[in-house]
Image 1: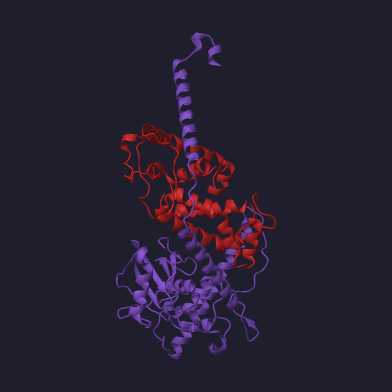
Image 2: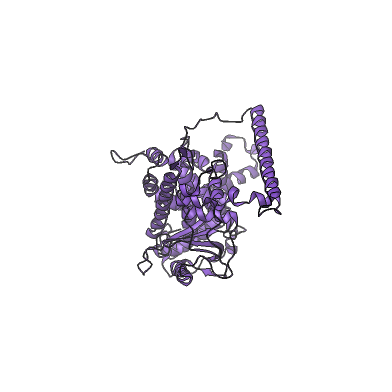
Length: 296
Length: 207
C-alpha cells in the first residue's frame, strides 16, 4: 500500500520496521516448520511397563479398598459410604450468604469438636488414666481417637473407625481392627543411598538383613502423616521396611512389603503419596521382575 | 473419536467405566494415548527419567481424579492438561533444569558431544534449545508447533487464553530463531538433513 502514496509521505523508519517485521515473521515460520518436522518420540517399553504396573497396582488397591469399605458388621457399614450421585452446582461464585452460612456451620462444628475433645481429656485427667498429665494435644493423639489406621482413613475422606461407631475389635477384619493399634513399624535412617539401577537389590538386601524383624536398632517411631502415607501405599499392610534415605539424590522414604517396594517423597501423606517409583519384589529367590523402574 | 475400530469404546466410555470400578479401563486409556502423552512430558522436561516420573505422577493423579472429570472438554485434553501440569510441577520441584540465555548464539552452552550420530546430536541440540525457554513458553511452543494442537485446545490444556498461547509461542519462536538457524547451518554444512530427531532408545526416548 505504501507504494501508492506520494514519495514524500514515505517514512524511511516505517519501511525499515516493515522489512524487519517481515524477516522476523519468516524466521518464526522457519522455526515452526523445523520443530513440526521433528518426529514424535515413542515411549520406551520400560517406561510403558513401569507406568502400566503402577496403574494396575492402583486399580488393585482401589478394588481392595472398595471391598473393605463394603464390609458390613453388626448391620452397620464401615469405611467409605456408598457413592452418591453427584449434584452438579452451577458454575461461578456461590451467593455470599450461602458461603457465610457454610463458614458459620464449619466454625460451629469445629468449636463443638474442640469442646468434646477437651471434655474427654478433662474426664481422663480426673479418672487418673494413663494420660493424666497429657496436654490437650496429647489427648487428641490418644490411640482411640487418632490411631494410625484411623488417621489414614480420615485423611482419605473415609470415616475414622472407633470414633462414633464403637465396634468390638474382634469383630472387625484384620486391616480395620488394627485401627486402634499403634503403628506396627518403625522408621530406619541409616543414610542409605538408593540408586535407580540397584533399587531392587538394595531393598532385597535390607529386607534380608532385617530377616523379618519389625525394626532395627536405632529406628524411630513414624509421624502420623508418615503412618497414613505408608498404610495408603501398602494398602493397610504393615511394611517390612520404612527407610529414610535418598533415591537418585532425592530425599525419600523407601517402603517395602515382601512383594513390592515403593519410593515416595519425604512429604508423603495418605492423601498425597508423592510416589516416585514402585518396583515388584515378587520372586525374591532371584526371579525378580522389575515393574516400576525405567532402567528395567 | 476418529481411528477407533468398530465396537471399541470411546475415551469417554473408558473413563466412565473406570469411574464405575472397571479395573482395566484406565489402563486401556493410557495405552491408547501413551505415545502422545510421553511426547508432551518428554519435550517439556527434556529428560527421559524426569519425563517418566512426571508421566507416572500424572497418570496416578488422573486415575484418582477421574470422578471429577465433568466432560467439559475431550478426555485427551483433560489428560494432556494433567500431564503438562505434572511436568511443570516437576520442573518447579527440580529447579536448575532451565538455562538462562542472552539470545546470542555465541553464549549458548555447547551441546554435549555426541557419538557422532547426527540424529542423536540434533536431538541433544533441540533439547538444549528448548531448555532456553521458560517452562510455560516451552509448553505452549511444544503443544502448538511440535505436536500440532490447535491454539484453542492448547489454551484449555494450559488454562490460559488463546491470546496468551499465541503470545507465548511468538516469544518462544523469536528466542529460538538464532539458535535453530545456527543449528540448520551447521547441519547443512555437514550434509545432514536438519530435521532428523530420531529417538534414542538407549537413553529412553527422544528430544
